[in-house]
Image 1 (cartoon, rainbow, N blue to C red):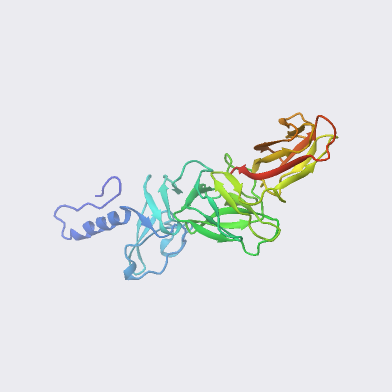
Image 2 (cartoon, rainbow, N blue to C red):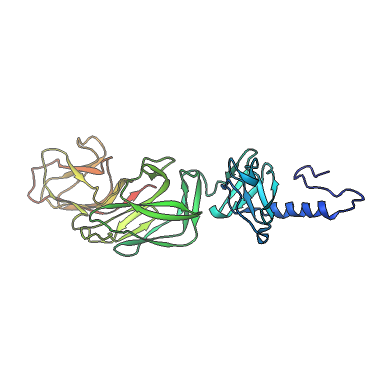
Length: 341
């Protein structure tokens, strides 16, 4: 006879060798209690020795050799190349060591236990300026689109851009490296959001977008401070490229100002200062080239620090809408931006 749930052998009355079912039952209990397996994808049994007794694997698909026909079952090593197989029950949970992840049997397959909230969730992973070629990324976790679950790391890591080019956006992506979150730099921009504001690398859903850094004309990362999803530049923002407009005097219609050198593709909101140095004439600042969208007016000899909405091309627009074209006009400086990830 056996128990109804786990199929553990019970000890027959008046058994001549009670140790046999008793020891078998203990082996199964030992294997599934606080279950831990080394791998879940192997399709052929590894070579084992006596010292490997007690180690466990989830048998991979289309298994061969001694594991043939046992796919999905827990293979328990009981000696040198000797195996005992435990068919999983619905609700079984095991920790898969090589992935550092918990899996649960749903009645037909082993599925990862979703962690850290819904698809697209992200916690921590703050970028910190470290040097002209490297940044630190703090501990945290991120949902990875291709995996369908979150991967985490428990410590800060330093990452360096190899062969950094001048005047270039480098996008930071998180990926699963043997169960631990790791990071890479790429000039490939993130794709459209796959869940909420969460983005993956264009053409590669195994890479989750974390943020972006920009290099200057000397191939050095601009200094910055990240707070939540806000970036503030720690540079002279009255000089190129942060000064996106120097002495703008157009009076003939709404004129485009390009912010893309200091605001990444994942932002639609720049932060900075616009200063109208004209002695007369108000300058309008807006989100389109017709003055029909959001816009406001900066009066002569006034400055206005604010968040500036940008269009999909990372541009805003200006026009001297009163008075005549000035000789000294509008100066527009970017201090930072808000982005989504």
